[in-house]
Image (tube, rainbow over all chains, first blue to last red; front, side, top):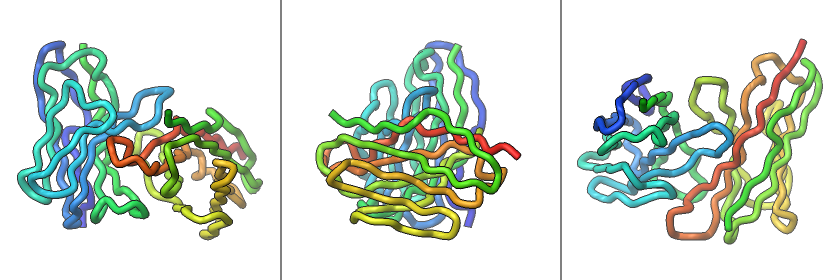
Length: 114
Length: 112
């Protein structure tokens, strides 16, 4: 099992550009989520999904879109990148999103918006 | 509001014991996690507590007191590889966006 795979590892964008961060998991997990991690702040939830075809907003959803067409994939789209979106992004999954389930994290994407 | 507090940085010596504290104020409580994150890497799961008491797992133990809104992670026989950030995360009872609230993390440096 590869676990949770994120691509790319690094990305530089100009303000206003759009891009998609890819996330795939091969553990047949129903729950998938996107977090961003900024210095001096805890991981913050952007969007999450409890299964194919179902997505919902997290704490900081503005400027991001997600879709969940398959169980395996959960891409995060930046519609029009802004410098405030410079951050490290982590995708995470768990079997069902149950309260006692640990999260499995991808290796992260470091995004810089100039 | 939701708030989790943990020290920003700690230092310790190889072979020693270190305790990393976490206090929380959340809308209800439904479990507390500790994750380890090495610099430039993804967080990895260490422990989960939902009932009061101590959970021991090898060199690492985690304690929870729900009445005090308090947890600690205890690391024994410290090794250089334990230098990392330790993230406390609480699952509140809210069913909205707050599925898991993370603290800012405690950066632990272990010296020889």
